[in-house]
Length: 320
Image 1 (tube, rainbow, N blue to C red):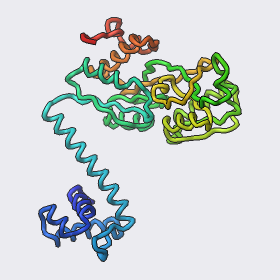
Image 2 (tube, rainbow, N blue to C red):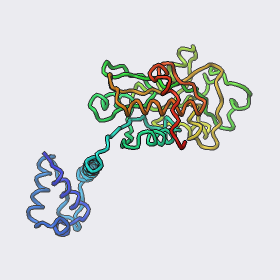
Image 3 (cartoon, rainbow, N blue to C red):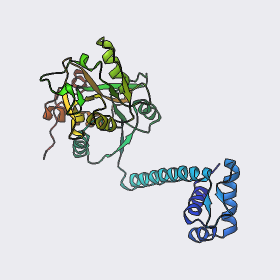
Image 4 (tube, rainbow, N blue to C red):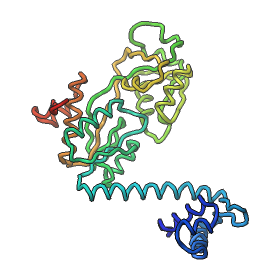
């Protein structure tokens, strides 16, 4: 098995492009360094370094191995740093998994509120899809997940924080931007609909497709992209329309025009956690959501109100 020590040896040789210089950097003799690299090549089953070139060059397999080695070492260093901070400060950690594409534009305000309410907790974020969040929760790698897709699992409890209104994102010169008032989603039937993310599935894209199906609207053309930002850029360029949560207008290009929908369509903001979790940090996060939603004038879901006692439903820490 390739250990971290030999990975560092390989990365140093690749960076220095010389066994002699790499050995000097590592404060070791050249022959044992060369043997360690040969051991790695034997384990992976192919040459990683072209030793005949001067200076040394990586083979195509070597370049791939180098990129992967850098990622592994970086993650290892991050883990060591996190553990060092934890041991030094003895602060409890609270890890929040969230879906990519900036699903919650006001997330920075939430984080700041949480840190005011729980100054002794070390909160960190990890980008994960809704399905990855379920696995990470069960393995204990995160404490809560924030997403929009309902993933069923007996070990996970889902808490709908609120339903967010959906808007239609369009280019400023689109014929659909000229009319006043809400836009009937049936008018999008002949317009290319930009969906995100294209993978993994099921995802928010499938929720949007189900929405049109439930309304009996058949779409003539769909375009799938990986990220919300890409979808908004394409909408601004006139490539089609995109259905996005209302908070996306805070992330959009200035050229994007947003129109409300005639049909009352929404997307849930879902907090997932392990079944039976009653940790103080989780309760603090829920109270932070409830307090900020109240201040912003957002409706709070009935399930969140039931979860929090009346005294907790509208927390306002001193100084805010």
